[in-house]
Length: 596
Image 1 (cartoon, one colour):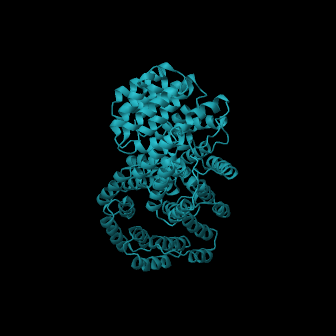
Image 2 (cartoon, helix red, strand yellow; image 1 turned 120 degrees about the vertical axis):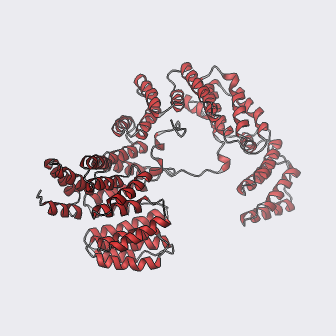
Image 3 (tube, rainbow, N blue to C red; image 1 turned 60 degrees about the vertical axis):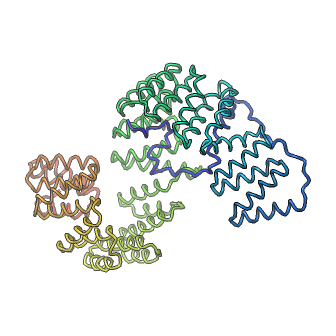
């Protein structure tokens, strides 16, 4: 069981593809402690507390000297100086005992990431306004992140004691989050355990103790505490999620969550975690069923829709993927969220439209892209050029590429790579080769460019240039599995030096064991060496991961050789339906004298 398993909501699923985390100011990180009682009131339908103004504001006359000092301090701070303005505000706070001035000094120090200076100002702020919740929150956050951890214990102890029973659990969880960020981790964990000990009859205390036990490596203690939490409150989602987190492996966690869902089918957070674990275990069909159940309950939840879209693609259901991702984008356009980015879904939809030959639709999706990431926008413009070319306008595609201006050498190389690809796809392979040959002089250290040049050289029959280039890539970028794979596949495809071909592809497969194209290469090596059963097994495995036309062509040839001609024809028809112009398919059918 991975320690990365977390008690999360659905939006965490595949978050690297869909969610861009929002940056929070350092001083906001501890605000959830203040929110505990407010959340309880909201859940109970009670009116929230009225905001309180700063207490103990002294009646001090503003002199012209003070006014000048304040204005000069603010102007200097605005111009990038923090220390002088900070000292001015701190001095005026000490003179007037005005907590607002101490607060402003703390804000200046925090903006400059000067924690010790900020803590000095916050101590003064609390002295002048001892009942200020905001001052206490700043103080707690700063002492916990400093070497003054012990100063926080009395405050946290008091907060727990004064919290209502309904809110105390939330206070415990937020207190745990705060103390787990302490500079002295062991001291922070020990303080958590001391603070919750008086509340050992509550489910929340055992959940917190399970988490701290896990943090100090006591797995058995963590499991015992999690079971105790669930025993106190058998219908608690957070308790069962904690127990699953403490499991030995994913299979055990899946069993725990499934048993809970059988008894509590409406537990959304548990179902979300269960579905996520099924994804991690590559049980995609089962995971999709769980997300479909969640979708019925929350039809406009963007995280669920995105997860269903990604899972549908994984299962080669592109039509289903389009439907879910379109709904995801529509929801996001109706109600944008700061912490969620629809750009990757838009790019996937463009790709899906392209795969079914709808090049204008693919461009239309690119036009809906709204990302503040310049690299994403640049990549979209490269794809736009490729789509223009696929629609039959190669000069227009090259003209579009010429409009892209960048000082970044890597991006300049990308533009040239795309232009060469457009030329190759248009059958102008010699022109593409010359263009890339010139590019190797412009970008001699760019191994990605050299790799693509090698593939282009092979296509024009310059296998010596191809091999020399790939060996240079391997020497300079020994972790580039694609270079090993390309060279090994080339040898196998030409039916030469098959022992070396196997070694190269095995090296690539060791680096990326789940890459379907490297699996395809290994299957082709086995075929060339006469190992038909091994070839079939490898190619079927590759095709199950990705139903790519070229893999289908290779698998079809192996089956044809084994006498399974009907199944071979079926595979080749599938390949033709996806890519009627596929060169590998054309040459294979011609060589074997097969008509579909």
